[in-house]
Image 1 (cartoon, helix red, strand yellow):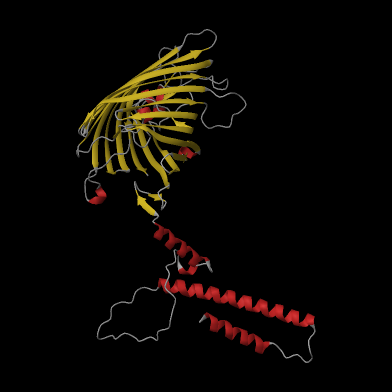
Image 2 (cartoon, helix red, strand yellow; image 1 turned 180 degrees about the vertical axis):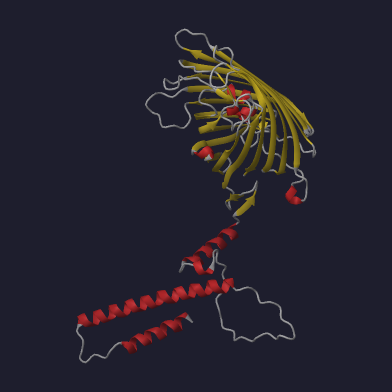
Length: 495
């Protein structure tokens, strides 16, 4: 059909060309040939476009509806057509030519066995040979917080915030190489968080390792090693938020980890987190952690852990002033503070973890201490913190404990609401205590929290925390003993 159209077009061109009154010169013949070639090329391009649009329109025609005896089908003359193709976009947007190539590539990929697996809300792509894997990842944590009962009106406020608004990727090549990269957009700022390359391998059955290099999340304490999307409360314990290196949760460096059947150990060496300051040396942080599960089966786990760090501060990081969350993240007036503290040269911290679960109930205790070294012969500033947390799944689900990393992860919901079940419902409680009073300007405080978590499925949750808190700061705008209540709620999606 295309050949006939092209022949007709050539005949039309021949008729339209005026007869020459005299024998043309070589230059005239060359100009005529070039002009006819240009017209033929233009007609061919137009025919190709029309053909591509017809094929896409054919693919978009729905199957004919069934007919009845009262309405006999209309007989249409049949002409030979090429096989139908399915365009991957609306017919009116089909570009000339490439649509058929896209369909061909997709068919070749399917024939080769490329697979897409749907995991926690997003696809995981696997190459046909199994060598390459790739998936997007992210989290959306939206909070609302309201404080009341304080003796200071400036603390009795209601706020909203994005605890995390994260987007990233992860993937691997074969059995050994893997990578991950994430950016967080919460609180109207863009921040590089996890970003690393890694290598993993097996030493012997039941014993393997990995080594990661890049911008690394701390392996420090139970909740300090748990992601913000997996903590059983809206905010981590004061052990995780106060007994911490000055550079906080992230640093650029290297982390080898060793895993065995009942535990793991890690060693981390990092400089500063991602920043733009290359005028002075980075701080240096060495951090180690190990956990052990002496009891571990399908229904119960006993968890024991130890960790510690040592940090030599950069000349650009000598300010050690701390203002630590005690009654919710999104009330900036509600903190336990040290007062102004400068002249730091380094920090050393250590802590212990003990807990576990039996069936749907879990319990975890953590304690830690941090020594901040000061210049000019001043004594160290010592801060201490401890917490006791617990939970119980009313729906019989197991706590989301990750025995490989010794932390909490995403739960495995037995009966998601999207499958007609109730989801997983968890009741939680926590007491935590923080003491900075080793300094003359340092404060202290404690908080008791009761909460409920409703996991709609393994990656969607609703959380509610009711906190009764007490602070006794000796510096800043809110000094002397004060207490009150904070109610916070969260909607969270992790993929």
